[in-house]
Image (cartoon, rainbow, N blue to C red; front, side):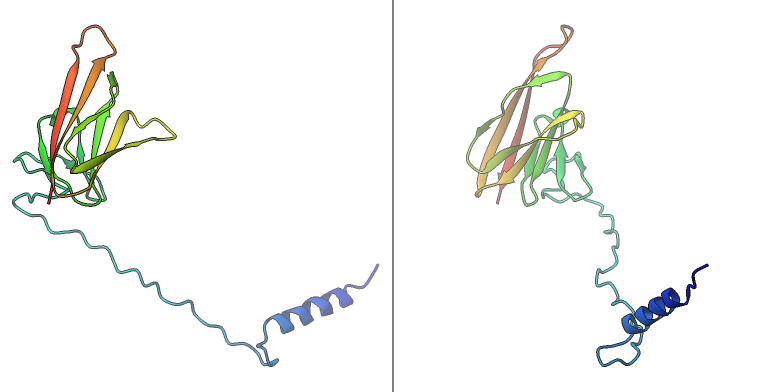
Amino acid sequence: MRSRLPAVLFVASLCVLGCSGEDGAAATPQSAPAPTTPPVTPAPATSRPTASASTPTTSAPASPDPAGKLILTERDSGREATVREPGVSIRLGHGWGWQEPRVLGGAVRLNQVNYLVDPGFTEWVVAPVRAGTATVHIEGLPQSKDKKPMDVTFTFHVR
């Protein structure tokens, strides 16, 4: 049976060399720096909505996403909203063949969101371009014979 003494000595010498500082002295363990990310605190609830990208200018609130971006759906058709960064999302449900949006006015730009996995809706992000007003029209063609075509319209203000 072979002796394991040379292997044990070799491993022990590696541990001593690896655990020492540059000058051969034993290194002292150091703790990792504390994280610099501040704690997240929820925003206080307000009693009245404000006109921004997270709330519309009409009285009934639409739903914001976790990042605070306003999300409009076909049920919000006819709504007006003020657009600020990070923009506003228009999410229109399946069951309709949504046509290419028409934008009247140069205050906003629409960017279609293409998902790798179908989320169950078609989405466009409305981004501010310059001060002014723009109206977005999107026609929905029904995918079943029991529905009529739908025209979805939103008005956006950029200040």
